[in-house]
Image (tube, rainbow, N blue to C red; front, top):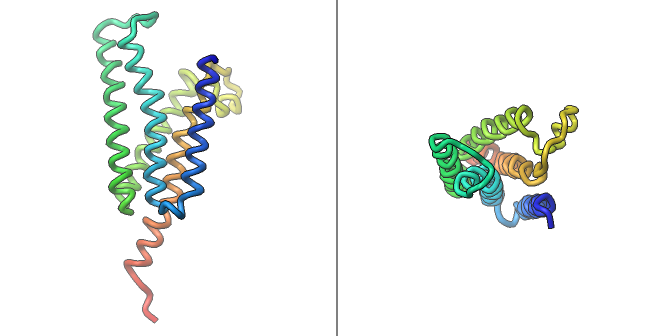
Length: 178
């Protein structure tokens, strides 16, 4: 089986996990399900960006980088993994506890991360994404099915955790006197 087919299968599996967490949000608790969705998205990013940077700097092969650039590329992979672990810690603590700071941290990571991924990806390498096809850009490569899963996971996390963190928390903080 080709790498393209493996990536497509992985993308379908991740979307199935996202859907399952979304459907189970009432049983799991909205903020708990949201915190798991952040982890799913982080796993996709760590696999795509971190693994890519690390594997190309460690494995001998066609990528010819000077040692200085190779070190920075390797460390970008390491810090990607560290960042995703920290984002998961924020999700599993602050977001799961219903804290607004956790929700805003995820929103910040989403806006900056996905924004850069979309903008820079549109100019450098679109992975053959639907967005690039809609904009009549030439399709390059493959892998958009898996890479597009993390924005969906994070948007879902933000949406399903909004009400318990902002609306229900506000209602509990200031009850209406009858």
